[in-house]
Structure formats: structure tokens, C-alpha cells
Length: 411
Image 1 (cartoon, one colour):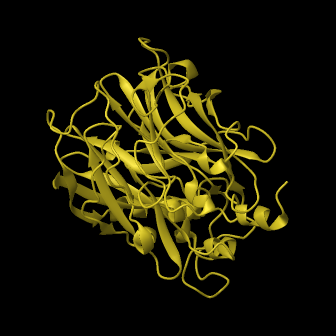
Image 2 (cartoon, rainbow, N blue to C red):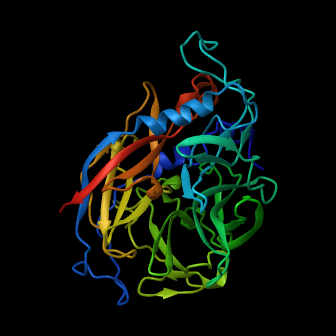
């Protein structure tokens, strides 16, 4: 059982939070090739980088409007682990990890500052889902959407997609990748990586139908080498490519590794259909091998995003070193398995004043178009001590920010 200090830290609402901010690293070439995948000089794949970026005030303000609405008492007021998926009827489903619910009060707050605030007793749940229609947030589904699998365990939702209920089926469902984490002691104050699961939600009602374990990592003795999949996924040619990482930085390794799996369309909830990159080929029931990262100076963190732009795989993560708490970098490849090239041009995330950090950059393809990408990043209080008080005193510290990014040919 965790001690009281660790339990208190988990109540700060940091979720994927600061652990992601501290483990996000730089990415360089560490390529492994597969004869069935694209070559660096094949087709329309070319080097890509960030040509420009700008703050997306409209989306950022919409989450502030909804979160600050004092007429609701049981809805989303802040969260991290921001992911989204477009539903067939046009609605957008937003998924969050650790989430504050309850009422938000108008400023001034108890400290006399001009920030909206919440009581320090506001409910905190491990996951939530919010619905958006035509750019306006409408409702929070009953939370948590995904119940805890066991005492001292919880589920964080990550990437999601709409796919056939089974390969070839005309019926469609929502599949959500879940990370299972178990309460632990330092350095695992944000939970020990335990398993990857896939949840199935019905359409259009979004009723939770089932949760299926895909990759149980409890047999891996070293928690820092356990791999959780689903921080991001890409669809291509009848396959869903699912990316994941380990938590090497939790035990002070300089960098974590990125891994890749693939699943036929319609089979995300079938563990037997998952194929893992084993270092030279895709295989079922294989121990995943890294596609990027040397464990010393190159690698990724536990939260990053991959999107396909005109034949090129483009990856966004926080930059390496001291810039890793403020600066987003990009990398590119012609195959999910690499080789990955970069970093390209970086940009600095806009942050509130004080001890705050940015983390978990996520692309939302359903909001882009016209040569632009919409990217979110999460914001949190940098220091664990006192985080619960700071996040309650200023509710804007624990909500996503959005930027518009324009990729272009690069080197």
C-alpha cells in the first residue's frame, strides 16, 4: 500500500501530468527497417518540419467557458491527458485522464486574486469524457467513464478511434485505448505501469460495453521497462498503427523508448490481432522492441503524438533538456518503425505566469485541414508540493491550450 505522502500527491490532479513533463525527451535517428514498409525515398514521403504556429484562442477559450460555467455541479472543470475522436454524427468526443468535477466560483479567489477557483474538496476522478458539437462543449458524460479495475488501480484513456465492430462489419463502435496504472511508492507516485486495455463504446449512445486487456505488463519485473500502448495512433491502408512508450525516466534514465504495434481495422479489441514490432518484423505475441531511443540521450516520453501528413509520419513531443517543460519539437519518418529524423523547428508553448509546465502535445486531425494541424498541450503546476491548492486557486492551470501548426517541407 502507498504511504500517505504518495497518496496525497496522487490527489493533486496531475494525472499523466508532471511525470510526462519530466520524461518527454528528444528524438533522433534510431531506425529499424521492414521490407513491407515505406523507404525514406519512396512515394510522397519527404522531410517535414514546422513552418509556423499560432495560438488558437477560440478552442482554448471554449474549454475555459465550459469549465467556468457555475450553473453545473457535476461536470468537467479541468483535466489533462487531452485526446479527441470524431463521431459519425459529427460530435467530437474529448477524453481526459485525471479530472476535476464540481462547481467553479467567480473571482476573486480566497487569496484575493482575480482567478476563477474551486474548493479544495472538489471531486477528482481518474477519467472523463466531454461532448462537443459544432465547436461548442455541451455535456460531461457520467464520470468516471471507465471504472477502476481493482482497488488501488485506475484507468487513463488515451487515443481513440471509430472502427467497425469487427473486421468487415457495417456496425461501428468507438474503441478507446486505456492505460492501467497501480498505486506505488516513489518513484512511482503517479502509478506503476500495469497494462494496456481497449474499451468499446456503443454508438450513438456511448455506453461502455466492454473492456478487454491487450498487453499485461505485470510479468515484466522492472516497471521502468513496461510498455503501455496508445498515446497516439495513425490509420493507414487498413491498419491502425498504435504507438507507445516505457517509463524509463521515472527511474532517472535520460530517455525512454518508443514502440510500435499494428492492428487490422476493426480488431483493436481482439488481443490476438495485435502485431508488435520485434526489431525486424511484425509479430503477434512478440516482446515489443524500440523503434526509437537509445536509453541514454535519445528517446521519447510517456506522452507524444504522431500524425501522417501527405505520406510522411510527423511526430510532436516536448524538446529535450531544460526546454522540455516549455518547447515542442517535431520529427519525421517514412514508416512507423523509422528511421526517425529530427528535431525540426521548435516552438514555445504559451504558459501562465509562475511555476507551470507544458506537456502531452497531441494532434487533433479532425480539427485540422487546409494544410494546418490543431495541436493541444496540457498545463500543470510544476511542483508537486502544494499542487492541489494551486490548481484549485486558479482553475486555468489545469486545462488544455491549443495552437495551430502549419507543417512544410524541411530538412
